[in-house]
Amino acid sequence: MFAARSVLMFALLPVFAGCQLLPSPSSDSTVSTAGMLRMQGTLSGDGGKLFFQPCSEQRRYAVTDKGNTGILQEAASVVDKSGKAFADVRGNFVASKAQGSDGQADVYQLYRVERPGNACEDPNFKRLTIHASGNGPKWNLNASGKGMVLEREGQDEFAVPYMEEQMPEGRFNLITDANDQHVELYVAPQRCVDTVNGSVQHLTAELRVNGKVQRGCAYFGAMRND
Image (cartoon, rainbow, N blue to C red; front, side, top):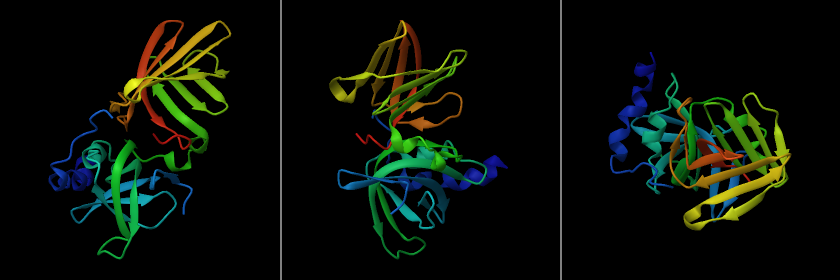
């Protein structure tokens, strides 16, 4: 059933055959940045086209991959049984009455794409600067203007202030020392795939706690739109 229902997304691949995968790098779902909009919503295929429907809205935008983000290919890899995927994108959204849609979405950046779930209702997203996570063992880090919260499997939650260090080529580090713990998060703008749930994110992450290294993926929250 999965293969049958998701075939629509895969059938769209020739439409954007020239697109590349990520090389390295008025709604509650909208965040303004650099003359564009950041939006979260649902991707689906219909009539040979890819459409984006923002969270909590009925409007559908026909997608054009202006930034060569590979959004179609990425979505095809994570669609659910209904042929839909969640996406977090930045671009220009132009209202129109084009046939079969309410407008056009010119996508220039793909922050993440994953199977539909509760991402539209994520209460933390609006407050975060970055979210990072990994597996084996599982860990999760949320950073905001008020500090960072690190959760690790089998460990107590760790909530502390931190410093950010900017590096060349869009890389940066989050660093903190507290409670006899030296924590560093190294982030780089590079396509990253979560090995457990298959989600695709626009940043790689490396967590170091007292020298022990764990790797994972990351994406910017609503408070940061680099």
